[in-house]
Image 1: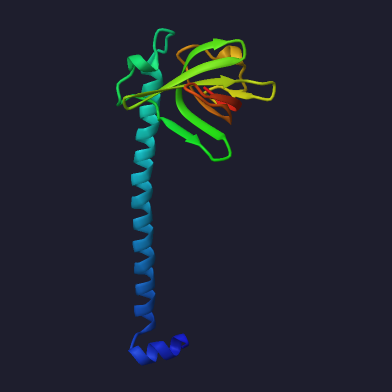
Image 2: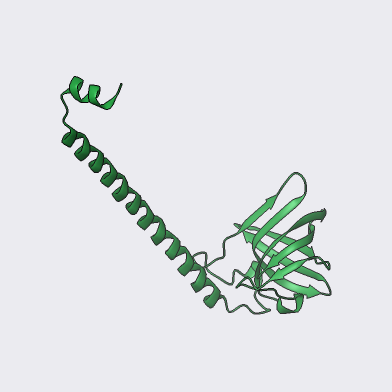
Length: 167
């Protein structure tokens, strides 16, 4: 059905169709701006919460996941994924100790304590909080890190061969 036939059949004028089209476009624009504003506020709040966490942690070697050094309102985002092919992603893990090329990390999740050993290799890429290249020596006990790698050992303290580590 062409436009002229629709106008004649339903008794609509060209102005009515133009106003209707503009009204729909305006409604979609306002709705989009509303959702953008809501998401932008949530994103800003999340960034603010992360910044306040980083400044409030004051990470020290005496802090450990078992002591609950931060309140749940300021706790880092905890994430733990182990794929069926052995790939691992840990986010919000606290560095407990560093011995040679091994980093011992922990996460408290509810009432459970998860401990991991992260093995670094020559190909492991390490980044600072700002995303700049860093070294293993830049990581200290108390730091909160994100680790991706491959699970190479199980047991009560699984071992991850790290591909990437980010402070």
